[in-house]
Structure formats: C-alpha cells, structure tokens
Picture (tube, rainbow, N blue to C red):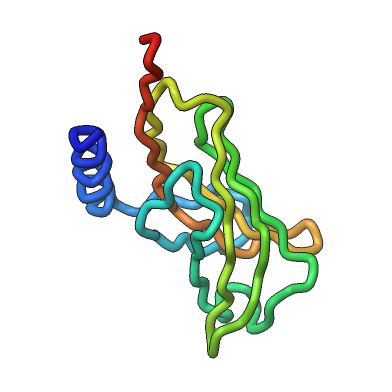
Length: 134
C-alpha cells in the first residue's frame, strides 16, 4: 500500500510540470487554466476558477463536461459557490473499477447556456487496488 501511495505522489509531482493543453479551436476565445491533480474516489475536492473566466458572475446553469478520461471514469460538478473573486467548484471523481490505475490529463469544460466559458486542464489520478484474490 505504501508503494502505491508513493507511486501516486510521484505521478502527481510529474504531472504538475506538464504544459497547458491547447484549447479546442471553436472560433471562440476560450481560456485554458491548469490545475493540480484531482483523485479518484474523492467527492470533497474543489477547483477555484476566477470569476473573470466565467464572465464576471457565477452562472446559475453552470455545467461541467470532461474529455480525455479513460472509460469508466467520471467527473461530476456537485456544487458551485463564491469566495471573493473566485468560483469554488466541488467535484466528485468516480471510477467503475479500481483494478487499474488512472493517470489521465483531462480537459474539464465549464459551460453556461450551451456556450463553453473556460477549459480546465486537470490531471486525474487513482491507484490500482489489488483484491486478496489477485
């Protein structure tokens, strides 16, 4: 278990040095912000986004979509609030199975009214968990 924890921490450090991914060419100017990793099986994680990236306000219909995740991994926006000049987004990261590790560079897109507002470049990490039968 300690070895798996060290691997996860090493992956976290390595991913924090990755360059920011380019935003998709949609004809709109969409900012891409880079973040520290979020982890699977954790529902208490938050991402801070400057309100300037959301048009100066926290939209009541804010949605989150994810690209670049392996099959069976989901990131869900569970709450959004304000803290000064930032939106604080609570996300839930889940996966269908823990038999394989996760190390994905993911683009989370925040949208309102069907329009993309900002892309968040967020690594998603999870360690493999072996059951006693393996």
